[in-house]
Each structure stands twice: as C-alpha cells, then as structure tokens.
Length: 153
Image (cartoon, rainbow, N blue to C red; front, side):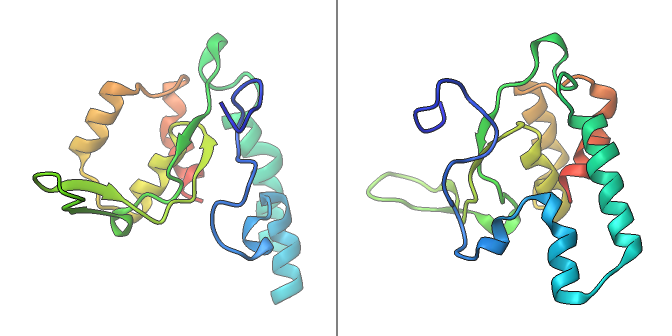
C-alpha cells in the first residue's frame, strides 16, 4: 500500500532522490525545460508530442496492460544497473551477500525496472529468463520489446 492510500497506485508521494525539483518534472515538461535551457528544437518537440500522445497511450494506456485483470503497481528500485549492485559482508552474518544501493524508488509497472537494467547492462540473459519465470511478461506479450524500448527512455 502506498503511504496510507486506500489502493496501490503508480508513482510515489515524496521525493526519493535528488534535491532539484527540475529532476522530478513529468515527461510533459521535458520540451519546456529544453526550450528554456537550450532553445527550440522543432524536431524534438514533434517527437516528444508523438511519444506522449501516441506511443505511451498505445503501449501503456488505461486497460492496455495485463488484459482484463490489469496490473498492480509494485515498489521498484528505480535505478537498478550494474553500478548500483554489489556483493559484500554485512553485520556479523556469515558469507557474502548481494546488495543494491542508490535507489530512486517508486511504485511502477514491474517491467519498468527491466528497461533500465537492459539499457545499462550488468544482468545476464539468464537473469531475465529467471525473472520472467517468477514474474511472467505482462500481456500483451507481443508488445514487451516495445515497452522495454519505451522504459529505456
């Protein structure tokens, strides 16, 4: 449950990383921020508009994921890649254990994390096979690769 809310929902209700409000702006504000800092780029503006108005609704729109059942948001690390994982000895426990650090947690579609993991590397094909054995690809499975490319953005 998300911070006392009645049902799980996407996002997070507090800042979980960084201290610059610009870092936390929504996708819709990217074009505005780029214009302010770097001037107008009509091609980029057009691409962002298509991404926001066409691609995202087609892949992630209401009722699109998970068939009739839909999806339940899950808590994800948010920035999981090879540089944010390690092994070490903790406390007085025996042995070496895996650990992750530098999270940017939020409640999201379970596949969201996988896009970042694929983009920056450090996880084998065997990892992804085992992951999907435990957490099957979301329906429609035929759009899985498209979702991964979107989540890499």
